[in-house]
Image (cartoon, rainbow, N blue to C red; front, side, top):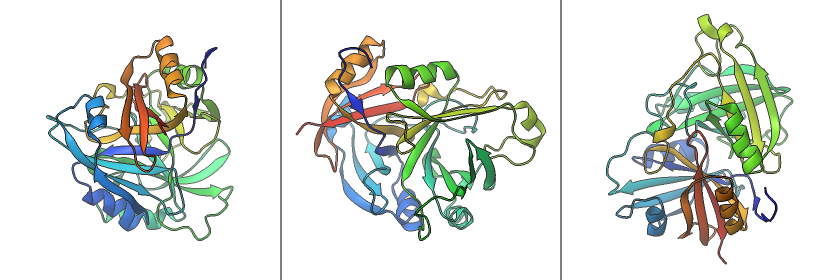
Length: 323
């Protein structure tokens, strides 16, 4: 934050998914995951004009884990937008660009993976136990309709408090991005947005055998991993995880990762003093993907909302109530 800037950003409260049909996603989040439908209505046309698709219309479904006001998912189905494609079509886990996944905690990953496979969600590998940053987890990277990818994470050690009677899918608490230039990504989130690191992990090589990213065992020893979790207040709750996978030289999908294409379209962060944030971003040389636009955003009512893209094309939106 520069001198004179008064904005304050919070962790993201929701992820926006643009879908061909809401049905398979509702089956995942509500049917299997135990979430609830919080809101269903037409998409505000002012938002679609702000996105640069003035002839479009659509409907949206806001979903949340019961008892949680953050970690939400907003499904959007759009009409009259012209050509749409997946944001990361036919991608591999090591390809860069846009939003890579949404992270959710589960109490029993074997049970949840079985339920999602029955709905045609498929993983990069079977659930894998691994250690990073002083934590031991069992994780499954799974991809479903519209190329939406989830990371289901079961904490092994230390145990996660409050998960004893937990069932289904937890709220979205983190979201990963695969980047080509780690320095540029960290400068954007750290120096420009003022996010703080909560976790840093680096390994020169994957361990032999199965890996959560599906790295072939024959080349695992030549592939590294570097990840950093950042949040405006240094938490892991609405945080962003920046990941590089040296040694893979994956494809770059950053140009396709914007609305109205299908998939993981945006992360939405609350902000205080959105005008100051917009001015700050422009002073830092960032081009606003959408200037401050007034729109209806349930359950917050009317908000001002602006968008900016990360160096690797992730579409980030910041909102503030106008009331």
